[in-house]
Length: 187
Picture (cartoon, rainbow, N blue to C red):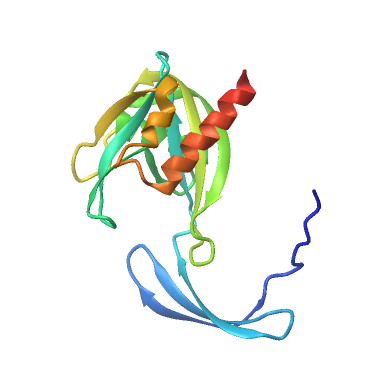
């Protein structure tokens, strides 16, 4: 299927930092589009390192999830282990480290399912979705303020995860659906 694509992004005529925190920088952009139209946009710039989300599958065909506090919604959410990629790490190295920190397992095998954008109109964040297999016990100290609750979920009942009131994070839902596509291709 052929799709018409724009050859170049709009020209940035002016960029100004309007707010900054320890995690994000908000920029105001004055843009010139190829048709001569000018617009003002805002974007949030993260650190640019990227992040990983790991879908761990045990030898007993269970998914390992974590329940952790989310400040944005001020509640606890069920989702897959995740975290930032540290400087110098590959996504797989970061995934293995986060897996050890959050659920107490390392993995012998990783498969990169897809790299997702997060609200690309406003945010430059990218997340690598990885499947982890060949799990072995290994614990690393994490940076969470409280211990995370690990939840085992039968892979055969993956669709029931979608009915859980606390399984709402779009990245985890996307990871679950990408996993199903991966598993059907693997057979």
